[in-house]
Length: 591
Image (cartoon, rainbow, N blue to C red; front, side, top):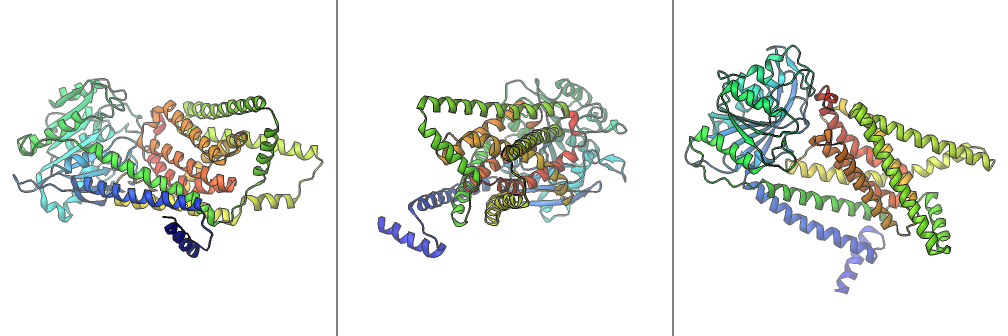
């Protein structure tokens, strides 16, 4: 066994022109082992996917002057009892996108349905805003997006395999409103299921500013004459929308209303329930096949799909973390004077009594808790006053106060030691912060993440978030104060307070745990908007980037390095979120 390891060492030495020690081998062994496990989990995911659909296509089309996108899923199951297959168009909820919620694509394609998951106006990759009006028809764009998608789908070759009398709609929340409007205005849709739909509101609200188009609001639009085979499913204690609106819709249309009364995971509005899926499948099959049993028993399995997806993503992220740490070996990374001060602290601590060291450690931990709490309270205070934009203001205040205190302390220090500030001193600071090796290393680390993310997202249609336009990339530069303030907290405030800990690895672990606690606290306390999938996904990206930056900072001790990493990753992802915020119009009215 030892001879094999020696042989591997020699080969690696020749390949990298670097001496590979036992520590490096452990890193490589971990990476190789994780890659092997990843291969098996990817195969399992592929097998699981193939049980539902054979492939998917990205569909692009135009509606009310905007470019919209959808995923078209091809079913794996045949329907021997009829010619042609049904087609379902699925519309997600507000602030979400077409491949976050996989319940409909997975469960319906598994039963022989084609499924087209739509990013309607102002969501996901699609352009436009939810207030777009089609000037040629004087109709809100949302009320025709499904119809425009159907027009596009009819031009594709797969549509020859579609039974045109079996085209239906299914939507959730705002998507529920979208499908209700489309089915009322287009008789080609033969059956509709609306999960917790937005049925009524007084503009402007929910980002919708429809003062001149109130007649398109579902409770003003729907009646028995323009509603066919409609099923509404709603929780009686929906925490977002008024259940009484569902009762009014039933009176207006004589539709079927299924009430959900049991507590559900994620809350009543999300309708995350097997019963909801089973009832929806039965509804379409009864209306399309005249039987809710001819297509075989209904077995809900989408949760396995999510388990395998998150297992694969967890393995990929872990591999990225190991690569970031291991790659530091091949760059000449120098540490700043910060490291020297930490070493001095350690020496001084070693000479003191244990009890004094415990007191100092306790004081440092209390300081960490205080600064973390102030950071959280600052975000919450400004977001409660101004909504999402309040986080931007909070970041400016936090960063501004920190920089002002640092500047005053720096000037006082120069004055005390009677030192004049010189250009030479400025050059040394800039040279220290903007080391070429450090910046190249940081850029490569960021590219690890982006490359893996893109490859997985194109392989499997889940959580693909990307800027919809160059304009949004420039607009999203406004996020700089946010990740700047976050990095100040972790690198310039919390990290130096951990100087009583000898191990750099331990300090990194504590920083990661602190980041997790802070982000989860922010998400929990700001749940009025963090439940939106795009916002929730942004929190997760921030957490992942913070972990990546902790590893980078451990090896470089350079603040500019973590800013570069944040800019490359967070900036691109936030560009996609910006498109949603713009698309939702008066988004702040939600909060």
